[in-house]
Image (cartoon, rainbow, N blue to C red):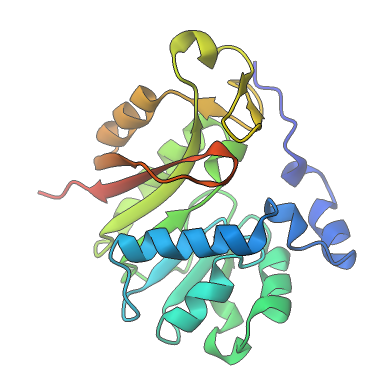
Length: 224
């Protein structure tokens, strides 16, 4: 049985946080550290200023406030379940808001990527799937195939070390307790690999220390 305790699904959650000036806090904290890590892993994956980035689950632009100055104007796109939280970040966090058209901040709770241009070359979903059932990763991997120029998709998950731990609450290295049936979710590495293969992706685990014990995977599409 899936027991939802995801605060992001609570009615009024975003409006209350934004009005209280808590747009940074509700996207997981450790704002500066995490934003730097996100841009670093993207650059290590080959992201250059002329590439086109899709930031999935962008929140209040924790990555965006660093990626927008790095990329050429117009080359950053973002999606989130709440457009309001992205606009709060656009107003408060960008050094030069003119470098990002707010039309490129797209509300999307289902990984449909509406209106995102086909020429996206890199995508990232950082600290997104730990809040969602495993089926949502399947949906994202499937729908990302429409970006024919996409070379690399980075995403993070929490892992359980074995099938026994999978079925019980598990304390991650950074202290977060994860679960198999409610957020924050954990999954098995072998299930990530199997799902990716079934959706037409090659994935590799990256051995990089991430906040809260998340694990980074890099996925590349398998093209004929």
